[in-house]
Length: 221
Length: 307
Image (cartoon, rainbow over all chains, first blue to last red; front, side):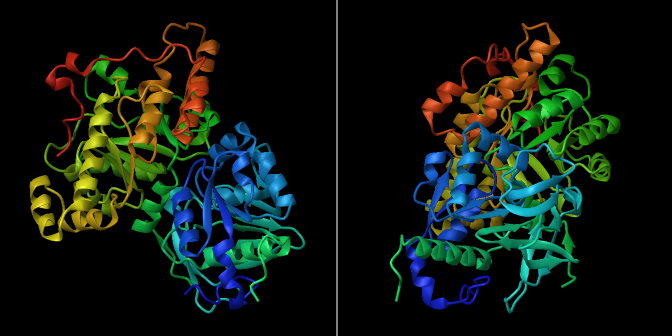
């Protein structure tokens, strides 16, 4: 299932680089353990990030689901907001899921003052699919994948607009639910729930590409 | 592509996973809810009286007034939980209709049924239930609970019972992991636990749902202790808004509440960093006074409620 699963880059020949890929999971609050497990199953070395110094030597960072206002508050009180912005500016890959997608967005509808990193040019609306009783799971088609992905949406944010250069990887009921631009990815559902690791395998591949571009990993050929 | 499902076990237990490493705070007013949200709470529990006041005032403790719950739902953007009485299906239906995000079928309220808990599978909204030991935890999960918490002894500001319950549940998980398969049925029989869930714990070394601390957490150190024991997050009931009893100026008292709430949030994230915990624990002022469990009469214990 994990083969041929990378988004926008499907060269299985580079998969062996994954053993060298170091990925951080922001471990302030939320579903960081599930991301850690899925990334490890996909071949990455995983570091839990609680302080800025934990970002050193990483190719990528996952900002997990949880409560976005809690995560942002804890990020700011330990200087992780500016550290992650610098990490992304230096070419590190960043993937935000659910609450993490809110954290990486440039605009948060109705909460213009909520701190955010603004790494990807999208606007999101918090809890826009409704309260928990409206949370749902649904199969979504993903660009370049043969089989749909069973996505779990929990008090999910809705992507209400995307800027130029942002690519839509998946939609549900017409709305973008997975987007990417450069080295930044945002998914409003929870790829870490349900045991299908294709999104994680794709992110590990992307981080392997980052490592190769930086010269931190010798080319595998 | 159109097979959209609401209220599935995955959607319910997955939501509970999002609270991990976080603090859920009891609040009785919209103002307290905002203080909790600003301090970094992952959710609030909307109540009419915190457990410490239920103890003092006595009487029948019921589901909160819907207007009061609605006021808190409207005051914050984070998830809102509310409590119903053990076995009170209709209170749970009302809370679901109000749009609360999680229901606590709680021993802190006066039980409505002395034999049966609610069939939680029948609801779209997820439930959390208290447990003192593994059999109770697995019975609640068998009924459909998407989250388990220790009962502790709510409203005492004394963490000893929460520690006892955490050690009991987590110790039993470790024991189950080490058992041979043929020993599992007798374990299930002895603990009154559903056999399939006993097998799950044996195979996975954890409950199939998240497992939080509750009942008596009053300080950042208490919260970090519960994380240290291996729980996934913390409920704080009376510990925040019953602290700072000596401060009479309302603005000053709100500041003291906010400092304590924020410190407990940070302590849960950095529970294994003693230097950080030392810094977090300073300048918080007076904690809630607290009650020794031995001073409580048998009929004042809340943790014995639930079947």
